[in-house]
Structures are given as structure tokens and as C-alpha cells.
Image (cartoon, rainbow, N blue to C red; front, side, top):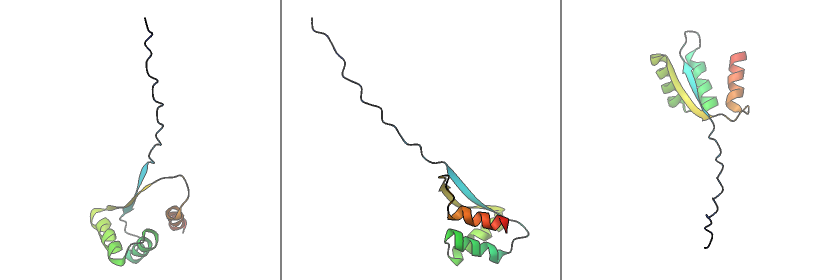
Length: 89
């Protein structure tokens, strides 16, 4: 009687994990001037004047606004450098 052999199982593919997503949230406060907020949004997030004004006004009316959603790579990038400068100034 012939032996029955099962076909070899295909090798499992390794999947790379998606990076975690982080939200950059703009909070409203009573101390930061509007012109400064607009200039930071334009410089860091490359927004136009009208986009930055809209984001700033949304945060002003609602108390907070999501500015961007990005993946974290663990490296210090330009956004992190700007945020570090803004918090240590």
C-alpha cells in the first residue's frame, strides 16, 4: 500500500507592524497670542494663512483641534524639534 504524504506547508509570511499613530492637538489657552499660533502652524505644518486661521479658530471655539495625525518612528524629526523649541522658550 502506498504511503500518503501531505504536501509541505507554505512558510508563514512575517508581517511588519504598522507604526502607532499620534495626534498633534492644539489646545486653546488664554495666554498664547493668535499671531504666534498662526505663525507656528504655518512654519511647522506648512499651512497657508487661511488654513492656519481656520485651525486656530476651531481650537478657540471648541477648546481643542487635531492639527495632524502622524506615525511615530522614534526619531527626532522637524515637528519634534519645533515643539521642543516652543516648550523650552
